[in-house]
Amino acid sequence: EAGVVQSPRYKIIEKKQPVAFWCNPISGHNTLYWYLQNLGQGPELLIRYENEEAVDDSQLPKDRFSAERLKGVDSTLKIQPAELGDSAVYLCASSLPSVDEQFFGPGTRLTVL
Amino acid sequence: GENVEQHPSTLSVQEGDSAVIKCTYSDSASNYFPWYKQELGKGPQLIIDIRSNVGEKKDQRIAVTLNKTAKHFSLHITETQPEDSAVYFCAASSSGNTPLVFGKGTRLSVIA
Image: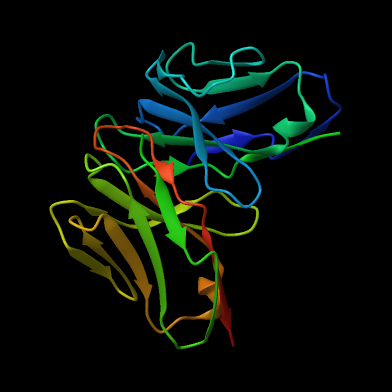
């Protein structure tokens, strides 16, 4: 069974440019999470989806970050415009409905110059 | 909200020795406590978890203990091997797809 797929794996952009990350969860996993991991820190939740509905986006900086999961399967996280402080690893995770175990993808490492 | 503290931040052990990592949590409503292993350039990998109705769980060389009264839980790795070298994260959540709150991680180095 394929795991959580993320692309790209690495992205380097200049500040003020837009960037987008893509995630395809494990098949059948209705719940999808986007986490931010700063260097030397644990992951922190940005947004959680149940199917296509964002049920927890309280930690998403909505002035520059947006996310969508239009068909309740894959998801895109966007930053526009990117700032130097956005340099981090963006992790996607998924889980079955009402099941605790979350499975993470490999992440996208973003560098903003 | 939940706050998870993890210690130590770095840990070096000789191959074959045991390693122990400890975490405390603040929210008494938390009832699910997973441990993740993260290797360089990879996402966190779930290695073991425990729920609040259990005090201890073991899977081969790894075990986790939970003390609900004291609000702390620990990861124990026995007979460590060089491939155990990684960053380990503890986390806590209440059940039902609620977000995980992670500790800051422990960098474990197993010296051959």
